[in-house]
Length: 375
Ligand SMILES: Cc1cc2nc3c(=O)[nH]c(=O)nc-3n(C[C@H](O)[C@H](O)[C@H](O)COP(=O)(O)O)c2cc1C
Image (cartoon, rainbow, N blue to C red; front, side, top):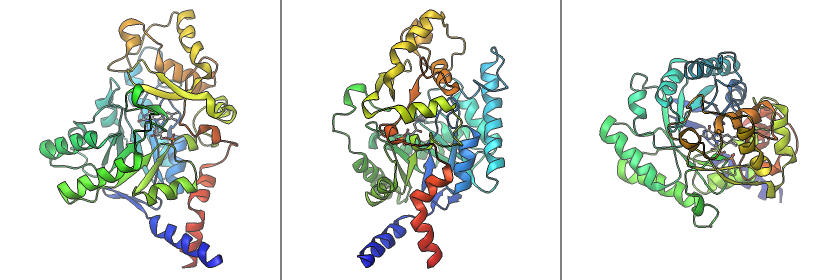
């Protein structure tokens, strides 16, 4: 039995390899998913990088609840607060790999990518739209790894072929986000989510194969969505992923930048509380749904008008339909989970205590560390 366990451990050890994105390598194949509106700010990203993964500061709405925002300078404050958080992460992990998540759907997407590179981000991850011009924005910084998020082979092909043709460059990795399990905005139509048609690891393997066949290039493919524990990690690697992106698991840590009430909402929620809603961005999103009816009511009671124009396309900005998403996420981040929006993945109900980033890494990679030390 001991021998059986040991050979299983050894097989896992062989699978858990350092993750190399362009010129940047981390000991563990884990990216902490970007969580907008200050859920993954500099503190969380810095501690993930310190523990040996890639930490991502998310750009969306980072100005809110920052010293830089006066109430009238949103876009300027976005750039400043973003850079402050990237530098905060760097100070926590001087030798770690710090990246950013910038949604293509943001009005100031281009400016935020440039600001991140200027502040020293080593990896730029972009989803919520096709980042077709990303290499142009980063042309002056060839060392920065560029990573699109895609939910389908078609999207990955379109991005790769466009980048190759226009910029002679391929992605340094692709994150494959599973719409059936991931948190936040999802890259799939509402009616196609949860039907059982989507096969995350078939998509991972197809994208891997595409790069090998078309470009003879071993581009790392990262699985995102629903990865919570060691068994999920092992499953992802065994199914062909080169690494994982995990977001919800890092919310209930001391280092996560959200208010204690936000973390408590994860601890309190049940499986049935987690579901889908339509975001004013025109994409479905996954969240804890208990507050949903109060989100729009809050905007009606407070006569919320769109002051920031944070998204390129937004039904609330255009016609007052649905709700103001950035202020709803901001309320939740500050602790008002009654009228705020708490994004989460399908596994958030599994959170049962506040822990630390290092404890999560120990749980995910601990035996591997011991085996490496013993070898
Ligand atoms: C609170 C929260 C906020 C998120 N914000 C963003 C975001 O700003 N940009 C983005 O590309 N993805 C965002 N996501 C998606 C995550 O980065 C990640 O890919 C996904 O949640 C992975 O699934 P998991 O949470 O089950 O690990 C968010 C997810 C959560 C839970």
